[in-house]
Image (cartoon, rainbow, N blue to C red):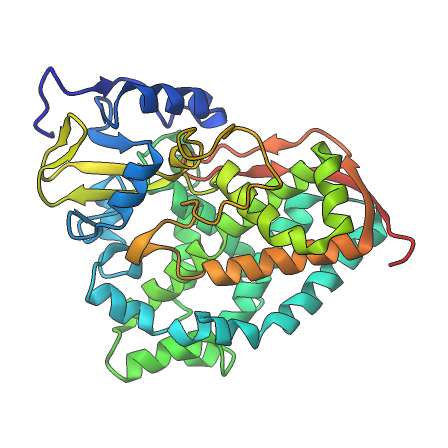
Length: 399
């Protein structure tokens, strides 16, 4: 246990209870107003909810290390040892270097046309049906196949990717019932991923081949290759998948936003940034304090686990006025939905490209969009998203 005193601001609120997961923001608001850092008596960690504190902590890897675990439990953290998620510089930089050229703006520019063509094709299929599920038919298909193609993964087995990534993210938190229910998907995904560090199964020229080149060069071990592929696949899916799903719901609920996008497809980028801020699909990751650190009058002791709550930070009213409202004119490029600092998501450029090309395809092909049924929120304690968003659309007459 951390060394806490009676003066330490604390809470017995369970941030991972189903009712809080369903609507976390009242609880997060109370914690933000209570103190800059609040100790969880239930799980033995400090939670940061204020934007400036979360961003500063994310940028200070020397005081808040990832190398001692970015998840809550030791069992889960053991599975991440040596991965790009759970290392600090210089090891972390060397791991990211493996795909740095592929993820740089020049590398992404080379694949934009390919991604755009796929987006238009997928949207055309859905528009032709008239009714479809924005999650099942779009959000869980488009990013997964884009990333799968870029890595060079075979089509067989891709059906394991989203369930496996979703289960993996849930494991970052406490082992609540949701995690235990999804252990089979997690184990199936890990077993499949363990077979992917094999050139014979990877398309030549893909990201997977670049990772295997790093194994041959001695920059990665075979286990390191598996964990690197898994880290990029997992991190490259759920933020994008769930942000796109949230946009599907938003367009149906907010005709003003949808009509604005139709009239000016250049709004695709700021619309995506604002849904990332509002939804923060990955709610947060942990760090471990390497020394005593003060947040106002609260001292977080050395060795404490600290939850950087991206979702709370992105709705801090001190940073974003009317934070619970989607504002099409906000364009919050400084949100922390992709993290911040050396551990900021390496694939965020790709995620933005995926989202923008998809929204451009929607704007070009769809006239009206409305709900065709009741959306269903997901129950993952670490990832905010939807299980289903039934939609009904009509095609643009000039498409």
